[in-house]
Image 1 (tube, one colour):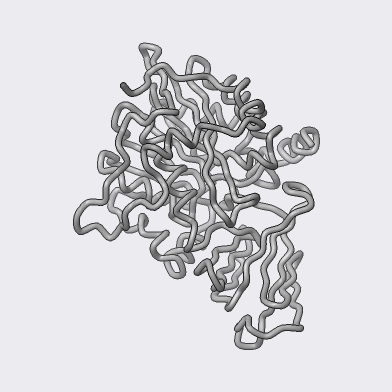
Image 2 (image 1 turned 45 degrees about the vertical axis):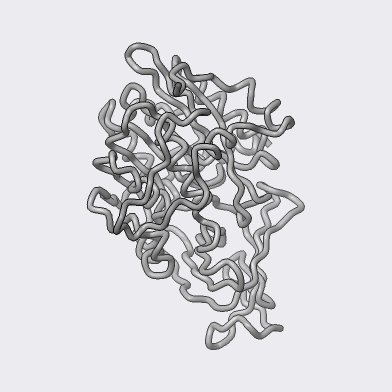
Length: 357
């Protein structure tokens, strides 16, 4: 598998950053009637590699999780357009609210998106002992990570580098709460290639970089390469942190180990850690996070396992709801791994030395 993944990466080093969090080959089961209502059956519609049949949507990827699939019952197709970069769809599901699909891949549902979005933002930001002022999000066009970053009142500026301008607009229309962060005056959205953007950043620009990335297949495989991580390292201030989507412990142990080892090589003198959360509509109901810190001038590094800052509170009059997944206890618990996963991850970790008292 490692050699196959390497071939994907080598062939896509110059490709633009895909907006998708998880890009794969997908099989759909679902019906599209003349009025786009999904209640009838016995009709099959093909769009590229996708098949719609009998009101069900299924994800199947022999490369990323052979022998298993995830399915959601669909009531109605709300949106279906091809952007310059990918196929963008929104469905109304029976039990998970609206569902955003990019190139046939589940990106988010209204019911469970908060788990991933809260953790990818608050794990790095709350681990920092100093207040983060400037944050960069690479990808994340659905707006969920942006919404969570804006909860931190100390953040003065948050920038997003997203390649596909259709995704933020679709998210605003069909998943408005997830896209709430676009309304924040501190947010700047740049429709551009995120890889090229971070490569062009001045050294020491950001306190935190969040990489809302895809699986290492196709255009976004570059996000798992050493060259990209070196660009992120350069863009961070001393003491800055990065948090990137870290795949599934049940499915991608080798890839996780390789990515952590790469961070260990790039973030010399810093810290490297791994955490995870549960989320039902992602493969095996779980997804992880790779975290790394750049050392301070005095050599201090972030100890990710213990939060140094409290979870952000919803201020009075805010349109944001209280947090639904993240708290200080779940922060620490997220780094406690089952034994099989600990054996994979632990050899590649580098503990921090600036733990909260």
